[in-house]
Structure formats: C-alpha cells, structure tokens
Image 1: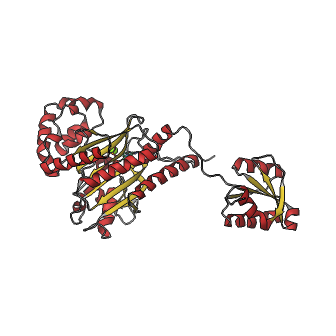
Image 2 (image 1 turned 45 degrees about the vertical axis):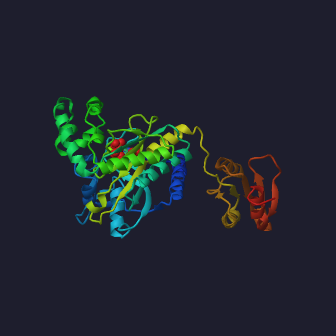
Image 3 (image 1 turned 120 degrees about the vertical axis):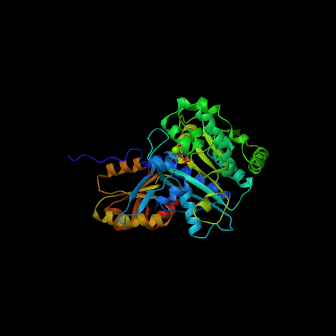
Length: 426
Ligand code: ATP
Ligand code: MG
C-alpha cells in the first residue's frame, strides 16, 4: 500500500460541518461591514517579497522568520501573503484608489506564516481585514472600533475586551526609543535572544514580547504615553471621548505596541479571555506612513484584521448549539434504467422551481435508497419506477411524518412539493 500524503503542519482542512460554521460567521461579519459602507476587494495571495520587506519591516517576526518565500520559475522572489494590508495598499496605489479619495475596503482569505503551530496559531490561517483610506481624524479610528463591537454583539460574544493605545508619530517615538534602550540596557540579564537582538534593531518590539520571563521588566518600562507628541495626544484624547460617547468600554494599555512596524498613533486589540495564550481576536490601528512608504502619495489610513480561527473558536464556545445548513428538501429514488434517466431530468425540473434536490446514484434496492434518503435530511422522497415513468407519474413519500404515500403527475410535482414544504401558500 502506498503511504497517504498528509497535510502540511499548521495547515488545516475545514470539513463540511466546520466550513458551514465558518461561512455563517463570515457572512455575519460581511453583513456588519456592509452596514458601515465597506466594500470588498479581492487581492492576490502571492506578492513580491519586496512588498513585505518594505511595509512590514525587516526587524519583525514576520519578515525575519515567518514568511513563505520562494523563487518562481522566472527567478522572481515571491511570498505567500502573511497579512493583507500591504497587498491592499499596493493594489490601491496601483489602481489609483487612494490619492485624494476616501475608501472603505475589506477582504477575507488565507494568510501564511511559518510559526510554531499551536492552538490559535497556524501556518495557514484566515483573516477578515478592513482598511479605511483618506481619513486622518480619530472619527474613523472610532468607527473601526464601533464596527467590531457591533460585530461581537451580532455574534453573541460578550467575553471580549478592548485595549487601546497610541504610538505617536515615528518622530516622537524616536525620543522614547532612546529612553527605552537605556532602561532595557540596565536589565539585559533577563533577556532572551530575540530581545537582545531587538535592543539594537527595534527596541519597541520588546514590549510586544510573549516571553513571560520578561513581563515584569516590560511592565516597569517607561511608558510611551509619556513621550508622544501633542498632536498624537490630542488625537488619542478625542478617540477616547468618542468611544466614551458611544458607551464603549476599553482599557488603555500603554504596553500595546503591535507586531508590525507601520503603525502610527492609534493601535487597538480585542482580547478574549476564552482563548488562552493566543487571546487576540482582532488587532488594528492607524498606519499613516505606509502608503507613502510603498510609493504612493501621502494618505492617512487605518484598519484592522480579525483572526478567523480564533473568532470561530470563541463563537463555538458561546453558542452551545448552532443550526445546521438548510438540508436538501427532496430525495429522488430511481428504480430501473428508464427511471434513472428520467429521474435526472425530473430532479432538474424541481431545482428549476427552487427546490434543493438530491438524486440517488449507484442504484440499490428501494429499501436502501430510502435509507439514504432518510440520512440526507430530506423531507420528501420522490419515488420513480418503471410504472410511474410509463404514466408520467411520481410517488411522494413523506420521510418525516407518517402519512399515506401520494401519487401525482410529474407535471404537478413541483407545485405540490413547494406547497407541502411551506414555500408556497396552501
Ligand atoms: P501575535 O502577536 O498573536 O503573533 P500578530 O501581531 O502577529 O499576533 P497580526 O499580524 O496583527 O497578529 O494579525 C491579526 C490577527 O490575526 C491576530 O490578532 C490573530 O487573531 C490573527 N493571527 C495572526 N497570526 C496568526 C496565526 N499564525 N494563526 C492564527 N491566527 C493568527
Ligand atoms: Mg505574530
């Protein structure tokens, strides 16, 4: 026997029950985004590696060690997208969507990062991402946060908390950076390799470390909030006023820095206490410098990404039972060559009338066909044999109630089933 090939570690199959749950949740997400005027954009899954180097930044987990990069047959350096913002900005610039315009966009799909797989952390994972371009004020930051809050309500999630912070501008961060390096340098003994490296390359990222051994050190570090510029401070104050006005609860977390380099001013995360170590369901913020950094005209921007694996997980925890897809409504059993031929056409006619129909295939005794019909979840079975075909008739059996089998003309079948299924008035 040949050994079966297995999926790649950290890349999951979504079997039909799971896929159905996912689709339902995605549709709810999309519905809420649509209610705020956000429109879908579909983007390639592969981009030039250079795009991520230039946007995410060299000294980040993603670019340093998580990208799936390869040379294609032309020798071009390509990367499976690790996140969606860079590609969205690239597309916006390339298609003239950004300059002097307001855009509210979303996308949804797989992202790839070569991380250590564990619960809530995979190598292929999925995000719904939202990007808003052309608006520099805190109102759009507030809109993004309110939109996610509405989404959690729509999904029945209550155990999810908002944390916000401001990163100021790159300029105001520079002064803070010096203070932070001074502080960390006097405590280097506790450092892990990553942090030691970052001390010279990107010390702010140390604040984002997941290493529990560093948490005390990080908690006592000087606060970025004490060092940001006045305009960023005013922006942040206004954002808090807007959130207060909307009755939204949040916690200012001065250690919240986000993993990616391109953030400016507002950053936020939604954190669930039901997820263990990988608790962030949604993360976002403002990235005013990115469009210019990627060769566009200066364009303010803000956005967020929701990790769908984590969202689906907490939706499952909060909703004990979830309804299943609408099952098929009708199962057509067929006995004999003629019935098999005419049955396919009959099923097509029923589908033309808007019914969900499953056709028996691979024959079998009527008893077996009816067993399959029962398992399919259909409400009615349509029985077709030589006799029925000869007379243009079909028999109908209610699979869910004890009632006499009906025989009626094939022409009347669609209308009858629609009535019986409550799709048309009796
Ligand atoms: P973390 O700090 O957990 O590594 P991150 O800062 O790398 O997160 P982002 O790039 O901001 O995460 O991605 C936004 C969201 O996407 C995360 O909050 C999370 O919900 C989800 N996410 C990120 N990486 C993964 C992954 N490897 N597997 C599953 N979901 C992920
Ligand atoms: Mg990460």
